[in-house]
Length: 424
Image 1 (cartoon, rainbow, N blue to C red):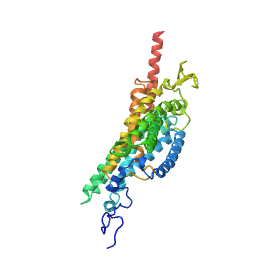
Image 2 (image 1 turned 60 degrees about the vertical axis):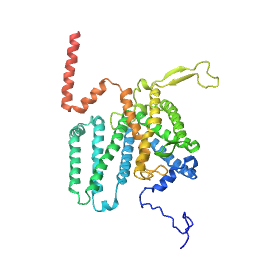
Image 3 (image 1 turned 90 degrees about the vertical axis):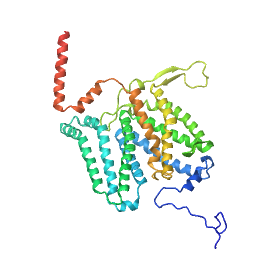
Image 4 (image 1 turned 90 degrees about the horizontal axis):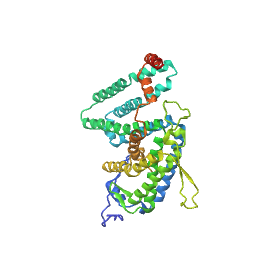
């Protein structure tokens, strides 16, 4: 018998670790071995860092270009990200040999996905669509009809998918099919819940999308760099390569960055103005008190080498500190949740669409948590709580027909006229 040089005992062949072709599943022995090493001790860390750096620069460049293009393009980017995330999550529990016995079953997943897409964004963007076509009477009537029947259209699309599912049930495939049906709905909840908040943030002003998203990116990069060079103390068992050094260094960096970035972003009207329609034109608006600087004189006891005698601070920077705290302390738990999820399914990454980073879902785990918080924070502490003229006008345009608006206009005019005569 030929002696195997790699075996633990003479003459005993070493077992081979098999990996399913086309899968990102990693054998448990490999996961265990890899989890025992910190990033600072990883021999291949410089090679992986270069790959990660290269793809990061491409992502940042593309992201900056889309931000420059405006609200509508950012929304389109969010939709593309959703499609990638859904694809990765659909494939997670997919069994090729089962799908071969169920032709068209995979198409059903996407039917539910696009039905949810139509419903969620129809609800969020309907008012802005109306505002876009108010100058054209024909388009206004058409869009008003579409919005009126939007919910019933989505409902019957869903019912069609439900009936499609029932009619395609096959004997000895029930468990797999119902499992996929439930998994599809779980994916839709995860993907569309966070993305609806993200899109709402975009149209409230790119600032409220860009700052939280940037803070998550900064926190992720800073955690990687601090862990890369100084990481020695494991942070959490779910993610063995994350360290306390990386977590603390990233937290400090993120909070400082939040305060500084808010000052930079807050000075651009393109980023701070809300978008009330679906046009792509340049925006110019009154920034509001949050984005008007307060000036503070530097105390005389400050060192003489300090270059500024007066410092300008935007009130929104104090709000940004709270966003930075959340991005550095709470949002990483989205990443820990994803790590535990991947361990449960014995996979290294959700996909391989981004070299050095994994899949799109791997990049969006913390962003999902952050987007929801940013929206809730904005609505609770930033957005005006009382009714304004703009809010009432939005409701009138959205809910009343053109004839009803004319009637309201004449009645309101009569009321104002009566008041004027009464006072005189």
